[in-house]
Amino acid sequence: MDTTLLQFININPEINKNELYLGPDHWVEDTSRFPSVSAIINESQSKTGLSISPQYMEKFDKEWKENLYKIFRESQYEEELENYFTTGLSNGRPLKLQVMTLPPGMYCRIHAHPNIEFELTLQGTLQEFRWLWRVTPSSSNDDGVLTGDSPSGPEIAKQSPFVHNRVKKGQCMLNETGSVHQSFTEDDGCVILVLWSGCHANIHPSRIHNTDPRLKPCAGWDRMGL
Image 1 (cartoon, rainbow, N blue to C red):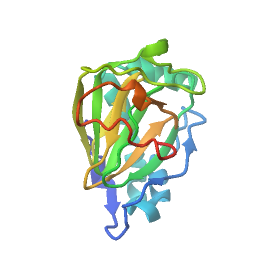
Image 2: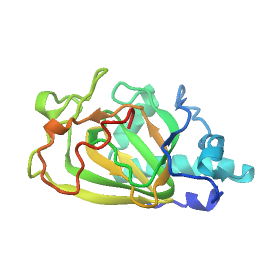
Image 3: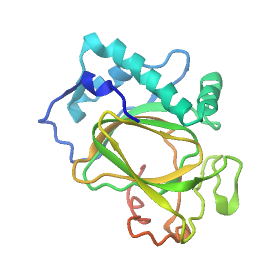
Image 4: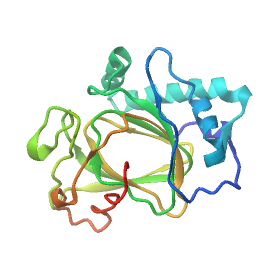
């Protein structure tokens, strides 16, 4: 989904973005008083080269939250967001805000989302192959387990369809609970701001039978985290 947030972002082109960077965790302890997302972006500017000028910080924060509500509403998952704001948890998990740099040519593990995520691309392009099905939070066994300390994604059948999406700078993306995808970057890499739990329901390559040549089931398993 398009936003107008790009107009507020200052870019320092001299910062090297060819290495994975995971910024500090900012756990949302009170959903009625969200941390300043522009302050979180500014905190990592020495690593990302991106910043928000002080006079625009309040407006950036306001518009970021408006886009959060808008994408959930337009995607018809507003109830999930409202439940998070009411309870402070998404499918039993607290959420945090974090800035990340994903270098060129990086592939994350194929995974399901055990809770909601909201991603804003600050620079570059985040890409994904998204499964056209989703896991229900109460599913188990071959359908994946999205609860508990060690969630796991579903078994992916041979002919399960995936669609290629691109989230360009200034655009945002919703990952509803149970959605499945593989995120990756190409030559430009990307810098993103994400609201998430820090937890993915990763799908082991042995459970991925899909023959789509675009997918990389083994990618990311040699790396901690994403």
